[in-house]
Amino acid sequence: MNGVVSPVPALVLAGATAIAVFLLGGGWDGSAVTLVGAIAAALLARRREVKVDTAPSPSPVTPTMEAMLDGVADPVLLVAHGRITIANAAARTALGAHVVGEDVRVAIRNPAAAQALAARDGHPVEIVGLAGRDRRWEMRVVPISDALAVVNLVDRTQHAAAERMRVDFVANASHELRTPLASIMGYIETLSDEAGEEPVLRQRFLTVMMNEARRMQRLVEDLLSLSRIEADKFRHPDSALNLVTLLDEVCAEMRSGGNPRAADLVLSMEDDLPPVAGDRAQLSQLFHNLIGNALKYGRAGTPVTVALRRAGSNIAFSVVDEGEGIAPEHLPRLTERFYRVDAGRSRSLGGTGLGLAIVKHIAERHRGRLEIASRVGVGTTVSVTLPPANGAVAATGTASGDAVIKA
Image (tube, rainbow, N blue to C red):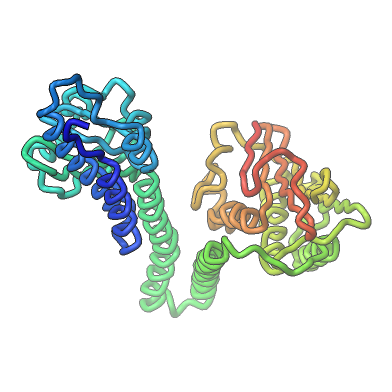
């Protein structure tokens, strides 16, 4: 053996140490650095030992080492004397297989990365645009020795997108609440002056204030509803529910609610539909939102067709209006919170901009599929496909919870 010690015990120790770091709460970031650091130490030891061997030495990077690193989900690089000597599978996917042997500063062209590589202090830095224009990474450079360092990259793209959505949501909600609140405060100030002495003017102002207060109430109720639905997102309902009975009740309620367009409702339901595993309150809200939208945005005097039928082994609910339709560029964004095709018209009709977002989340919780199809000048069809209570596999070929958009 010429005095060469096998690296296997070191690798076993490396794997055990990485697992221990993970179990103790260090996460995969710490585990990756620990694993690569231990492998680097094993490489150094092996290289020192093979110096005394005059025979040609095999590559110090064994298949076992590569397999262990390839098991790490995040990109990990081992840098020796400024060059990348090992790149795991995730790193080769993100940066390309050609980076092995390259100068690390060339492989990761970024000012923040260059500073981190020079500092080698293990502090995380944010890298933007690596392996994709909009991708965001957290990068750490951990020194192993004067010559060796571990570079660990963690993809934070989804986290950044979620944070942007949260910030946008708070900003939009604040704006939507501030607008009616400013109107109410303005009328209160006016009423506190001379205008409050005129009965007709006072009554007109009070009517406007009441309408604005109700608008705020609807928005707050929708925000609370959306929050509750998201909290229950991963808890699949287990109560058997008859959709025929529920839809009949919703349509009867809308007809008796005083909506002048309720007379345009046309209800079509197949007999003997199987029950679904559903949340009664949420599915009632889904029906109300979709039928209400069709009544608001469809042309007066045209039918709004509400149907409940079989779709393979599933149950499909659909609402068809004969309104102005929606242009194709708006369709992909309809389920975004506060997105409106015509903001002025939506607000004048009492819309909060959250109706379809709520519908989407309800459909997701019920393992259903939301589909929106529209043609300008013809009308819009919105349908939700739900699996039956027995858990039969969807026959539509689309993953549950998806929103499918058709122009």
